[in-house]
Length: 265
Ligand SMILES: Nc1ncnc2c1ncn2[C@@H]1O[C@H](COP(=O)(O)OP(=O)(O)O)[C@@H](O)[C@H]1O
Ligand SMILES: [Mg+2]
Image 1 (cartoon, rainbow, N blue to C red):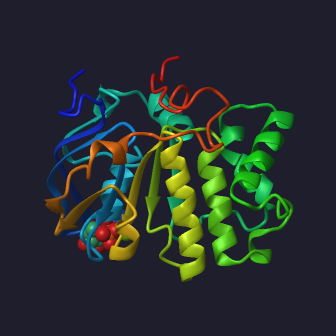
Image 2 (cartoon, rainbow, N blue to C red):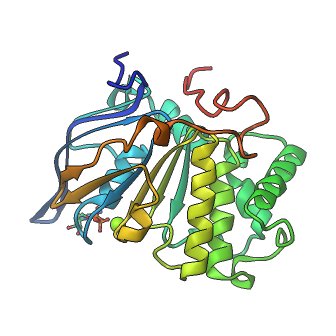
């Protein structure tokens, strides 16, 4: 596997990624040859106006969709050659997703929502409950575990979604406009949680169109009309270096388990 200039391994490598949507006779070039490298432990913001291809890019990064052409290597492995089982495993255990619309199931309590990724992963019932409540406690909702989404504020719902994203202890967190529906206080809380996750060693990709939100990341990439216009690169090595564990890890020393990428172990 190749190494980045800073000596850290690129966890994400996109080369010439194109995505064309075809709807009837209409064809939309959502991504037009994106090249992007993201190192382990980076906190990167992807900015761009509406329709510029941000969500398309996130779906590809999250193995929810595949490029029309070009390649995507995740932790050195060609995603285009992975089996459906490997991809499902990566989506369930290695990547945590946070969306603008929270995407919580309305009929389930907070902890039931948070345990869902563990159900797909086949974790036992008692452990699922413990880990879900632990994750909710970490996002400051230890006293809201049995509330349903409609009994929570928008900011609280998004914190439930963050708890759901981190309950599997993923190496990569993808957040698509996570503060787009939040007030400034809740925005600050959610960005604080993402900052903590980064400090604990996770790689974070934050999609936003708000400059204030993007400024919290160590690196800002601007996308326009499906291509990268500008990339600040990592601000400095110190900014991308995982700092002390803040409690989001699985108990081991900082940087041990969160970065375990091998999908076949
Ligand atoms: N599933 C889809 N089918 C057809 N066109 C799509 C689809 N998803 C997105 N697009 C189009 O691709 C372009 C990029 O969309 P998107 O990635 O959602 O942008 P952003 O997240 O930056 O607002 C837009 O022109 C959008 O209309
Ligand atoms: Mg979008």
